[in-house]
Length: 318
Ligand code: NDP
Image 1 (tube, rainbow, N blue to C red):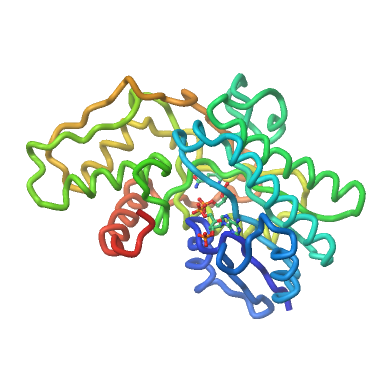
Image 2: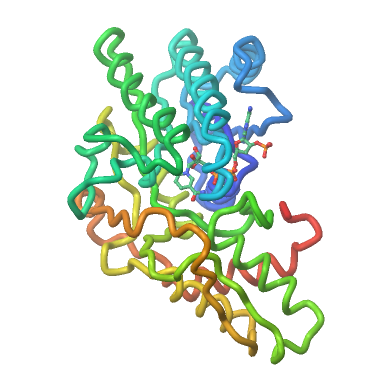
């Protein structure tokens, strides 16, 4: 029996995996989803107890301190230290417990700031990350270094995936500490909750021009499960929509405004930071393995997420 422990199982990506696995569980698999209430992965003893309790054979390591541009900019040291501690504890205790496979999560936003496009998996360490999120980036890059070390020294198959921006149900919709899509959704929700929106102004921070690739958490979940079951390499793999599916922040804002049926004005506050202009990633490696994988159309995924948010507003992370 394979016992799969999913850290960060209560978060955006973890809930996506829970959702997919409900209909895709294999007979020889037991899945366990844990959050910070089950163990503080920043603490070694707490992490050790979690592993002793569940006795996993496989780990999907999603737990992390995660935040949007503005939260990262003001807390780089916290992002660095918290993530280094969590990742080192999980990987080392996985090794001590003879875990067969660990799949950890990097992110396309940790790539070097000055880079040629499209970005691919070989470029993770090719230069400093963008100054806005160096703490998170260096902590994440060290996962790849550790994976290589566990392979070289101990023959372990600990690998990593590199998702682009994720969105979906169970995201963090906090006004200041969220990623762009849930942050904009939260503001639209507040603007639309009283009905009449014609006189209202929807302010989007930044110029609206930066380009991003967005993956629906359900699609990412299917791909991470595939990596766990089928992808047998220490080398990271980018899990992203195709390059042609890249969107500007303005396109995202317009799609969200339409989905919420917002009739007022959309305004761009250019005094706010834009972050990196683009970080276009190539999913060519993924496409070699899964040429026919169908990503959910962006508008449909946004609609499902907005519907979920409106229905679950009271329980959502606001
Ligand atoms: P969330 O913020 O939604 O969830 C974070 C998860 O980590 C939660 O389950 C949380 O538990 C858990 N966690 C945080 N701190 C601790 C701790 N000290 N001990 C134990 N558990 C902890 O994150 P996402 O689902 O968005 O991200 C999942 C992974 O994907 C992360 O590694 C992230 O870096 C990566 N990623 C995310 C992207 C995105 O756009 N969201 C893009 C690319 C990569 P609880 O909720 O119970 O407190």
